[in-house]
Amino acid sequence: MMDGFDWTQLLDFALMAMLLAVGIAIVRLRNLFAAVMLMGVYSLLSAAWFVTLDAVDVAFTEAAVGAGISTVLMLGAMLLTAREAEPVKAGRHWAALVVVLATGAALFYAIGDMPAYGDPNSPANAYVGLDYLIRTPQEIAVPNVVTAVLASYRGFDTLGETVVIFAAGLGVMLLLGLGGRKPRRDTEEEDEA
Amino acid sequence: MSPHLVLRVVSKLLIPIIVVFGFYVHFHGDYSPGGGFQAGVIIASAVILYALIFGVEAARNAVPPLVVRIGAALGVLIYGGVGVATLIMGENYLDYDVLHPDQAHHTGQHIGILLVELGVLTTVFSVMLAIFYAFAGRAPDIPEEEW
Amino acid sequence: MTGMEILRLVLDAASIGMMATGMVFVLAGALGVLRLPDFFTRMHAAGVTDTLGAELIIFGLILQSGFTLLSAKLLLVGFILFLTSPTATHAVANAAHRAGQKPLLSRHHPAHPRDRVEQGGE
Image (cartoon, rainbow over the protein chains, first blue to last red):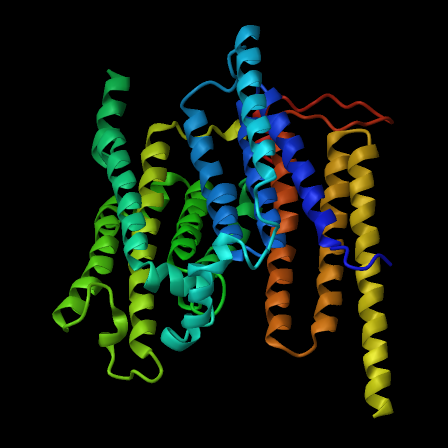
């Protein structure tokens, strides 16, 4: 037995490898239906990965939104267009590859400055985060600190997020309509005429 | 016999469970992962599942677009209303402690969090359904052969 | 005291046995998906073994967690899996069949029922 070796790391690596494989498959596929389905698979895999990283709340959201609803929405959007993607010119492939490689190299360069995973002295865990963890049992008395931070300490942020969601919905409703009865009947009559 | 009979029977069994689970996620958000956002998405996905299997028209009858339109605004109103209520009761905006006199157990905080998350739930549920209705209303229904 | 220990041991053995069997089933399903010749046999491998394997693993976990709330939640997960997994398999196989995917038949090759009227009457 190796002491101090975190075996769940292997699970993380396996999940990341699967994410990479699915991502490459999405890029390579021309069939949009398969690409949409693989995006759902990608979301589900990343949800599983978030669970192994102990970010259960995020995993929950990712599984419900990414794998559930956005897949359905993408399918609905796909029904409005073609089933196959147009072939892309080779030159654009290379441009995209250069952008991706440059971004990836920059991210790898930045890894050296990242704190270790779960480091208690990292900025995210040391100052405000630690404060929330200490004060939540006394001030809010809620076991789930994420909820306490989200709804109470950062209530203004969450209000802003709710308004953003509302604005997004409002935009969709204004641009596309709710697809309610009236416009549908109009289009049907147009089709018949 | 309808070719989707199995799907229909099973989804009729599952949709109530999904909705109940969504409410569990909301009301249990203090104790376990989850909260208003996740609960709203889960309940919306139950309605979307209903729409996928029984048709968008049936889902529109179950949750009319008017409800969706009102709900999207109502959620933000609930959230902001809790803040205004705390203002009126003599504290800062969204400072939930005044909502309940029991300061020892922080009941005001619990009530405030639940109410605020209820607002988030309503908005998220309505907006998700609004986007779905907007897209599904435009797309032609999936032909039978392509199931 | 010893009685409790024996019970504990038996429960552990049962749960380990169940989980090991479940893993064998899931592994067999994965192998089947990779090795079997056509769509429907692969679907069969993935669907049938996955349901049983996942259920066995969940029951093993229930034996581990004892008479707690966790067990109730696991039981619910098992119930949902028991409903959804065969349904998903059925839906995919049904869709493939209706889209005209032919099963690989080595013994006899009947004409594919192209006409929808005959199919609707089934």
